[in-house]
Length: 560
Picture (tube, rainbow, N blue to C red):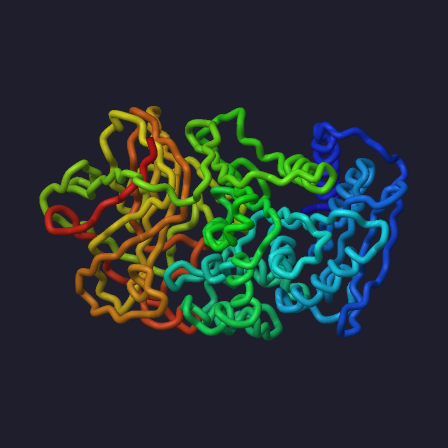
């Protein structure tokens, strides 16, 4: 990004912040907002840079607390702080150790509980601070979750968006690493400049050595990420990650959880909401909209007037009601229904008595309402020529491919097999996890299979709804690697992340079956074992069995 582009982006962000606060409905009560910076000592003596914006008002004022590692967003924090200050709130933010002028060594995640506890106790001990709210998105939300069960009495609520506390869910899907999220993040936040090519880094084998070989320095924390493939591995169940999974069940204050259908933390966030204590859930709100990690609406095939992705305004209203007005929120799950431009509200996340709508893979690459005659489709999967990600729910760096996008024509590559239904006689409203059940085989010791679900509109344009991936080594939600005998047909279930989507009457449903989706996921080498230790790759001959005697189908959880 050029300097001019950076300035234009900053100007746009500042105008957006000012515009959203102008719509909040609360008047300016203080034009004078004092700014102060201190180096706040932590328990071990390391001092962290802490910036305080305080309105010139008598008595105690409510305060918003933020902890961050992203120095490039400093202008956003300051603009937000001034707007809160003008409306009678203090705004206090701190840079994590080793970032933004704070002392100490930057090591992601591990110090945030102790440092966050020290800061929040200090804030709550300030005589001029009244009720306190904690605000964070993404890594900033992580810093909040890590203290959510040890909050002082003054902290009345937390507003935590685009993060989940089940880290393995965000890192892996059936043994394959989410490169575009965590490899990209590691390169940006290594603690030193990494200039290596991103896609080359993702494809480097053995990947466990990419840090030293391409990035110039060994990163033990990244090596643990890429080699701890099992959900049951000690790494994900002890230390900070083990603690994070336990914290939601101990939370007592109201939590606002914000997510997007196309945010890479969605799967983990859903598990986090389910894990909340009953006390917290009864007064917490879980909102899932049609946006990505940056709150951009990313459903290109759908227009709407009710996207409501103004998160700055949502946050202010939430904090004002609880901190200034003393209100207790009523718990709910609010989800945006794509294709209907409406919000669906419910009290429980998991619905009872949902019906299933199933379409079976059939001859001539069709999707049928019944099982047809037995048949097989075949293709060759070459890891050195992976299918590029286009339309996805778990991207960060390759942002232009995130969301529901116009898709290529059916069978657009030799390693992409497309199945297409007849036009729907009635609309189908889906809420929950779409899943594909396939009978597959390969001549390799292990491999991957990918299913992408699309809605084909009346004009013939296809837009992706959900994508799922699995490996034979981690098939059927296995928490650790299982054996596979080459050239043996086995059933696999490819479970996709939740979605709320209304397929329109007259639309068709299409699924593409292939074996790669890069860089959303690591490319399988077609060898057995940990993906990050593979030194090479080989081609694999893939088979999909369908028709009578086979499970091959796609299943939609319906409402209404």
